[in-house]
Amino acid sequence: MKKKGLGLLLMASLLTGCGGSSSVTYDPDHFVDYYISGQDFETLNYLTSMSARDLKVIANIMDGMVETDLYGQVVPCLAESWEHNEDYTVWTFYLREGLEWVDANGKIYDRLTADDFVYSAEYVLDPQTGSNNVASYELIQGARAYYEAKLAGEQPDSSMIGIKALDERTVQYTMAGGGCPYFPSVLGYSAFYPTSRRFVSELTSDDPNI
Image (tube, rainbow, N blue to C red; front, side, top):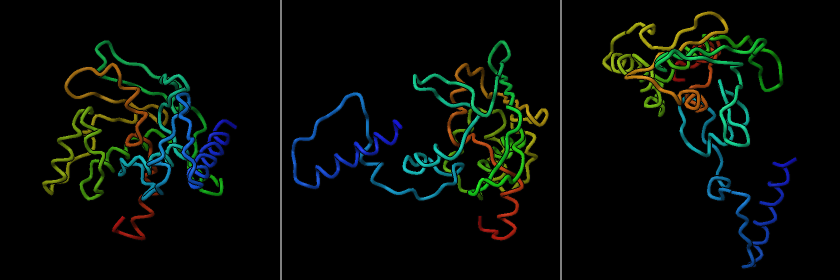
């Protein structure tokens, strides 16, 4: 209801502006990005885009390990809990049970597993993908070396990337260059959202340019 109310408020403001009225009142309790709200998205590929006009839509159709509550605090989402070692160099996330991929009609496509987070890294760090989010993985051990090896035309083993599926519901991240106490907040960014290896494989078998 809150979103609907804000939408009606925005529409009313725009109609007032079109009517030539100069009596627009600024409400400090409600922020509306008029520049972004007036643009359509270009792509829903959340692993390649870093555009705000794309991510405003993606945020409503995809989830990551964590999300933020109305107070801006990081809270569980796809992950039900997580832990870290003493120096914050290794983070382990435990996925909720019963997570599934569904299509636009709500039909179940596949189960969501820890490997879907591993594959996201492989996808982003493949130069042929052309992702704008490669730098987001600088925090992850081996990510830069993997990307540069791929860029040089080599075929590096993806196991060198510090993201492991310990089992179907457990994902472990190893940091590069020291501990990262704020890492859970990083996973709220769309570049770390999961991706179905099976789905991308099926797409690329039909169209090798994807």
